[in-house]
Structures are given as structure tokens and as C-alpha cells.
Length: 96
Ligand SMILES: [Zn+2]
Image (spheres, rainbow, N blue to C red):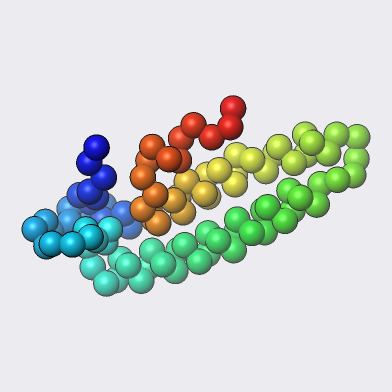
């Protein structure tokens, strides 16, 4: 199974090949810095959403209120995982 990234996870441009060692996920220092900044922002949003979801304990159907946060959280988490370089196969098949 090949897990070598061929395109920059930030801007999508093709990555130069041939360098030995761990392949880079970024085409440039700029994309690396920008992706790291985006990941910090995503992390802040994720922390806030998860805290808000956890706070849904009152009302007639708190479980339903909590589930409303699942899709936006999954969306942000998927973007984070993409930037972080999590292999696609591990981001799928979470609990049904
Ligand atoms: Zn790039």
C-alpha cells in the first residue's frame, strides 16, 4: 500500500520527488507554515464545538442536541486529518 503523498496537502501542487527519507506533505515552507496555522485554528474550533456538544445536558432530548454537532465536528476533523497527513484509510469506518 502506497502512502506517499504526491501533492501538497495545503495547495495541491505536485510535490518534487526523489529526496530520500520521509516524504514531505508540503511543497514549500509557506504552505507548511500556512497549514500549521490552519491546524491551530481548526483545533480551536474543534475544542469549542466539542465543549458545546458536551454541555448539551438539559432539555427534552439532549442526545439529539449533541448529535447536531457531530457533522460539523467531523468536517473540521477531516480537514485537520488531511493537513496532518493521516492516511485516508484510518479516517473512514468510524463507529456506525
Ligand atoms: Zn503547497
